[in-house]
Image 1 (cartoon, rainbow, N blue to C red):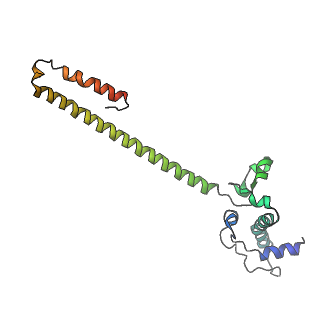
Image 2 (cartoon, rainbow, N blue to C red):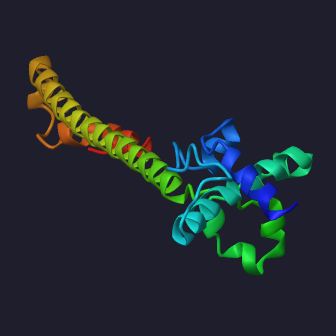
Image 3 (cartoon, rainbow, N blue to C red):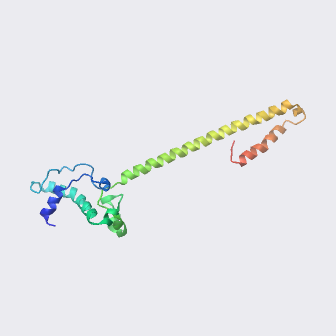
Length: 182
């Protein structure tokens, strides 16, 4: 490919996403060079910026068009900023690096999921503590009920006062054994 043909291809390139893969790979929206042709006069800085902005998008689309293997590769989370692609050939071959970094977006999503799981765990802990308090109140009222029933049966005078406490103690031990805490 000659330089004039390459410049023509870059001028004709629509830099906006064309498919789902492009959505993670190319900048979202126009790049400021729409309407530029190979006959347009650009200063050195603008021409350099246009080539840097569009060349990798053009390269990604050519790779996907020419090779089914390239099209099936997933995008690297770090994109063209990935440090692994330089010294890990397996990583460089396994992922597409002609894309923008999505690490910040993925990290924010993971942090939100982690915060949601933490909130759910806190809610479960709060409910567990409430259940423990409810169980404690239930056991206390059951103990009073047993004491009241002993007093009403008339046999309370024959039994020592500590008997009602010892009769509820085995049931408390059983409930504690089953995992309930007072």
